[in-house]
Amino acid sequence: FDHCFTKKEDGYLYCENLKVQEVMEVVEKRPFYLYSKPQITRNVEAYKDALEGLNSIIGYAIKANNNFMILQHLRSLGCGAVLVSGNELRLALLAGFDPTRCIFNGNGKLLEDLVLAAQEGVFVNIDSEFDLDNIVSAARIAGKKVNVLLRINPDVDPQVHPYVATGNKNSKFGIRNEKLQWFLDAVKSYPDELKLVGAHCHLGSTITKVDIFRDAAAIMVKFIDEIRAQGFDINYLNIGGGLGIDYYHTGTVLPTPRDLIDTVRELVLSRNLNLIIEPGRSLIANTCCFVNRVTGVKTNGTKNFIVIDGSMAELIRPSLYDAYQHIELVSPPPPESAVSTFDVVGPVCESADFLGKNRELPAPARDSGLVVHDAGAYCMSMASTYNLKMRPPEYWVEEDGSVAKIRHGETFEDHMRFFEGLSI
Ligand code: LLP
Image (cartoon, rainbow, N blue to C red):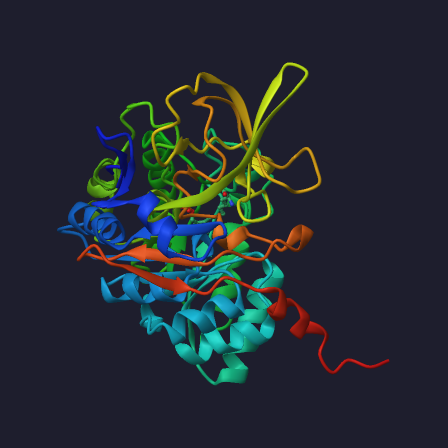
């Protein structure tokens, strides 16, 4: 995955062939997300190429980024969708995703949402005893048999931040291996409601070693053998999402989609399985920068700060997971500017409000642009309105180099609408 935001010799940051500075000059004066549409296409193509020769579904994990225009684009490129709430399911349907290429995941799926999934013919992952119960009820209410997969925890350590590790034995997701027989018996007892079609696992997110996927796939294939031995005709292996990306921009070579698929290809072919993958981050993270303006520079004690107009409200990953996202200025710094170590912080009233710590940067001019890279995944979708910082607008650069708004920024008026017509 190449970076589509690059600094050229003239000292300006470009998105494809467009200066980010020029985009800043023509759009609303507030923090915004800027995407490269061609990069989204290239990321999907990388997965498609990697999957050649396999029967597969690329289930894009909508939680990573739910921009409606982006969803429609991903759908047009042939992606399915991975959903974790009724509203994500509704959105996927509106965006035109083929429901038979959608997977409904989650440890707390609600009955009413399962009913919609059953009506639409979406794959549903069984996550627990009570979840199975709800899926059976949903099938009866919808009058439809549901294609289900069992989400099993292979208990392989993904070697990531604990907040984004999901496939370990004490996880709130999925079922433990020892319970497999109970679930198989339960599925057998509902032949009119459930059709078991596969097994699913998701290990965690930001994984940078593909061996981890191979180990998990090997365990999952053993389960599939066991399940088939009991007469189930199951054909889908879903290995989840989780491939990491190059957040550090240090030139380290990270595994590509091809590396990921190649580690499981033989296993998948040996059992004649359809492969489902659920990438979120690796499809969308590197297609976007969060673009900010420098409000000012200050020093306190031994610390230098660059204060920008964006904050943890629009982009919470650094505050929440101590995540590193690369930061750069969009234009050459003033000639007299010296490089120092800065914390890049927002205006929100708490010390957790930082976008980057200890960054070597030239002191930027006031009002100049500063970007946080790799902001396409889990940034806008996790934005809040804390301190009444409204959710930012989104734009993309199209194939022909033009810029289009793909989501309006939230306004103060939008906020006040929540209180219209209320009386006590
Ligand atoms: N499938 C399942 C069942 C998942 O739980 C997830 C992500 C994915 C697929 C997509 O994983 P990806 O390919 O994007 O790594 N907010 C965190 C990430 C949370 C991931 C949750 N599950 C962050 O900002 O790093």
